[in-house]
Image (cartoon, rainbow, N blue to C red; front, side):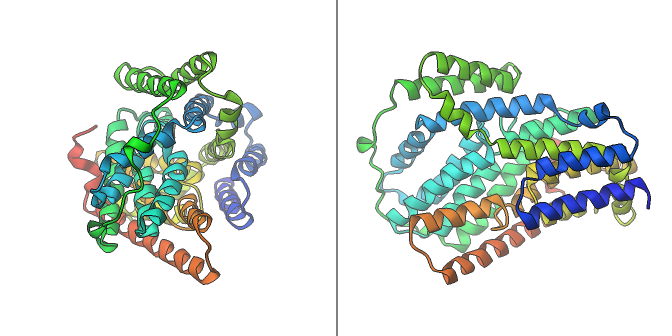
Length: 421
């Protein structure tokens, strides 16, 4: 057995152990990368080169800043004020849940933080308004996933960090728009299926009863606005600017940095970086090329995108999109492009990979579906039968979502006519 084959076996074992044992793959992957790299003749420094320090700093900075915004109540109060603006026009609640979640996710918090915040908020709001809690929570979670590929958010930062070393850049807007489109399409399916257009209820959120933003919250909003303008408009480094903005808020006494540090998703960051180290070792030892050669042996230029999309969706059912799927599939996409040349677009491939991975992420086996189920059980008493039914429903919905994305990939939707790259 060659070292390239062994490297793929190690990857499969790492993913399987994480799925079965429910442990953080990051630490396990780092250790596996060390042993595998040594067996393949790599030095310790070559193995450690897979740790993307720039990406790590960026992700810590962004999550730290938005952890502050969450802890001092800025994001929660902002959400309540926006919902209150709807007033008696409660038929717009489903649309608002999607748009608001996508917006919050896109400006920095990402799909995990925005998903937890908005899905929980949507669930409690649905019970209070006596509307379908499952559908309302889905609008929120699909929105959080749809907006997460912006250049300010974790997914967008990760995509950029993974692609630039391979020579690909300038696709941030395209990736954001395709992920947003994918989320919108399935939200529309859910909206029609659950008859969201018939929602009529009393809105418990009254703008006059919701407190105004206090000094600390206004300062936090100002810091976020300045960061968005400077990072998008003037191309400043997102992570470092987030640290600068966070430092100013700490000095002004607008936030509690100790609480904010605790909200940084250290586990997720270790997962992403640990898998990055392992995938880099596998790539060096020829494992990624082996997978690419296998896939390209039965794909053509026309089927490359849907095949990679389907592969990503299936992999996402048992692993993390940002932690496993993207670090594994992006190098494969680059290898596929090398094989087919100009007949296949790297940007289209990673757009399909990213969108389809998040399509699977509403499964109860993933963080997204788990958030919906936990929010539901926290908001009201449930039975085992009820939770089992919700489990089946969410998984079937994720299967349907993946299928729709594969069809979109086959139709060339993720190319967007080549207008944005």
